[in-house]
Image 1 (tube, rainbow, N blue to C red):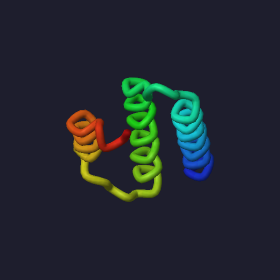
Image 2: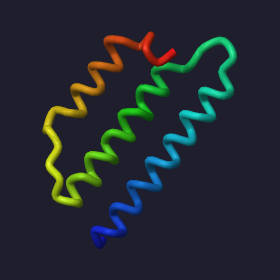
Image 3: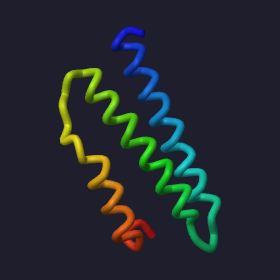
Image 4: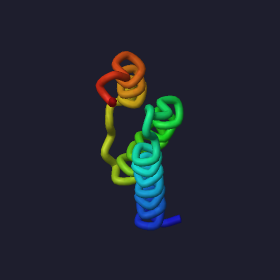
Amino acid sequence: MSVEKTIDYYLQFIEAKAGAIQIDADSKMHGLDWPKIHSMARDINVAIWEIRKQLGLHAKENLLDELTAMLDEHPEQWD
């Protein structure tokens, strides 16, 4: 697959996940499904990392782990 098609695939994936998060947030009256949102956010971060890799932009190797830890440590920030 060409770099352009790979990047387009990941951008569509990110768009779909972001839309799912928005729908989930809009539909919850009494609280958000944090495990589901956490999983979708992780998927988005992986897709972004893949795009950066395709473009030759080398992000910190442990950036995904750092972002996940941040979400785990302070979920109240996302209320």
